[in-house]
Length: 495
Image 1: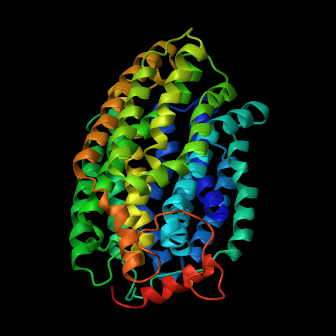
Image 2 (image 1 turned 180 degrees about the vertical axis):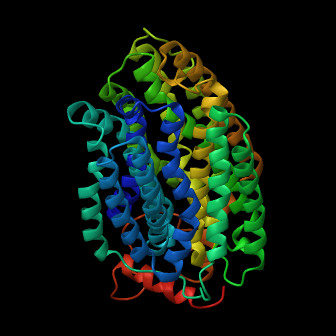
Image 3 (image 1 turned 90 degrees about the horizontal axis):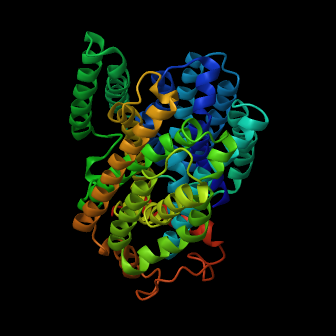
């Protein structure tokens, strides 16, 4: 658990640290809004493009092995980010950082899925969600401190010692893989997925700056055509990177909910800390500290939210949670220059954080429960890709919707008006995600895990507890190792 939390938390922490650093980086490099978008989107682009490959490689060659390679690559790219002499070189290093993130992120959840007993997984995923959520929320505070005390470059350097620690500790994690996976790597799928996301993202980010030029139109057309070709190729491939049979009704529904809600969340994490600095005059560390209530709520409540979803089903938490998130976003539209933190910012981020705790863990547990165990790596990769693409689109489109193109990003009055418009749009998305969950999520998806376990004689059918104590699945073996060994044995037989 510690290895997975530190590894994936490092990737999530980096995302929110960079959000706080954007105004400082922009002033340092005299960067336009488009360049700032690429500093964020470059990372998300390669992450989303290759995360399915990362999940597939983990299933094929070993989740721990690919996780370690990704962590090392992420740390090395972070060092390049810290040494970047220009905005263009920083964007290039961020692209490489996304490659590392694509390898390590799906492996973290897949290792939990393979190493924990089935009846403990909901709470384990809840703990993972809570701790990585804390890393995400701590990013603005830590980033603000490092920017103020040292430099924005220190916000990237912090990943280097963390990466060394994770790689060193990972040797204690049991290895797991899908023993049924055969055939060559799906190179065509990888290339088409990357082209699809690169083309559409380039058109969405650069289009508002340059207008509908031939280059923008060609990029958009290539992206759309590549999306269509990707699914056609995956359908015919003997060993697809993305097995289309993974898309059961519940798996598809949970990922649709993820897409809508994470688009809204991506908008908040992109704009809130910048708004506090540009319009309200907060220092980087004050802007980062403003989100501390989200950190505390995620730390305290996410494991319980995972257990709650296991007990009553995920439908209600995934309906109520997004509606509470939407309420928090609407409260953010009331924040104006000159307002005090206690009366305007604190209530908004508190309500937002409460809703977030009801979303992250249940939706993650639902996605993994809706896929077969042998596809846990690719299932995690799909869900992470969906979340990152949603954030990518939010970063690309929200400045256009809110009128924050060009240098309006740095103007306090323009930023205030644009932020309020953006939060209304995000609230509508979050509420739509709650409605979608109510009509599509089936409470039985998590209960089915326990029923399958009982059917195979691994746990009593009425045991839905998340107790740590209990007999190992194989006599004489520690629980985590036994679970991994049992998983590999099960993976070698047809379902």
